[in-house]
Amino acid sequence: MRVLGIETSCDETGVAVYDGAVGLLAHALHSQVALHARYGGVVPELASRDHVRKLLPLVNKVLKDSAISPGQVDGVAYTAGPGLVGALLVGALTARSLAWAWNVPAIAVHHMEGHLLAPMLEAEPPDFPFIALLVSGGHTLLVEVGGVGRYRVLGDSIDDAVGEAFDKTAKLLGLPYPGGPALAELARQGDPARYRFPRPMTDRPGLDFSFSGLKTYALNTWRESTQGAQDRADIARAFEEAVVDTLMIKCRRALVETGIGRLVVAGGVGANQRLRERLSDLMRREGGRVFYPRPEFCTDNGAMIACAGYQRLQAGRTEGLAVRVFPRWSLEELEAV
Ligand code: KG4
Ligand code: ZN
Image 1: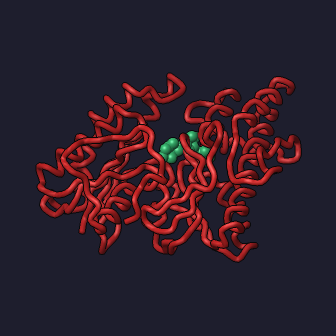
Image 2: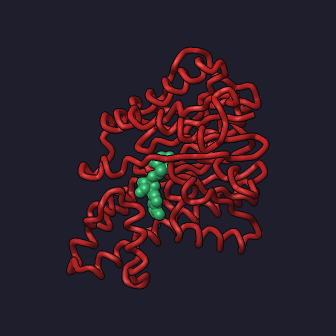
């Protein structure tokens, strides 16, 4: 069975073909980073229009790279939410129309389910159950995953998502958009012993997160410094250490509380090298295993949507003819497949 996957929930147009027997056949991505850079963030209307321009050429390219014809596609999966409503509609309408024209089912996929199943694209996928740390620009979630569609949210952010905190802190340090990768790069030159930032909400029980205070802490530290290049790098380092340490503490707590020994790290911030190092150390010490998608499948992409769509199609979970998108949508609302 082969599924074409389409991702348009935010500022990346992603398309891929996943084959249940062979794995990923081809994938392509167009990033809108350059388009939004001068505004310092994603402009929803520009995002929608760019998806309209890029989506069909990418579909053609991916079919060509897969060396398959439309007649060999068994289903078309698309991100139905959460995300920007106009951007989601472009993907949903295109996917629904292609499915109609090719006389195959359309499959609605939850964007975060795509992220948390992304390690299944790799050579050694995790078995169920596992704990997933989903860290992106819009979400910070700890989820107990019992199977496809069986998600229990253990922890969430009460304010900024972790990627958002990276982006905002980077912005106030004068780094270009998107700030996360730029801040991580700068942190490499920082002295880890110079500043120690707080580890928010680690001194009380529970698995929720709060990151907005760290951004303010970084701003105040910056204002009180001499505002030189080394100060900037040291602050970036202290911020990254505080975020990574906080995530690690909460992951360890979730693993201990559930007795599960497998951890999946997904979402854009999952591409962060320092986070990967620290979590790999943790799992080595605890005798568990950690699974990551390759960095390009941590950030938004079509491959994770094709792969999640395949799992759902195989279980007979397809959509009717109505085109529906869900800008806000909890993982816990999904039905087990
Ligand atoms: O999953 P994603 O591509 O899009 C959303 O669904 O939000 O995540 C994007 C987020 C951005 O906030 C970006 O700054 C952050 O992931 N990010 C990083 C790194 N790479 C991407 N944050 C820290 N370190 C990185 N290496
Ligand atoms: Zn995402």
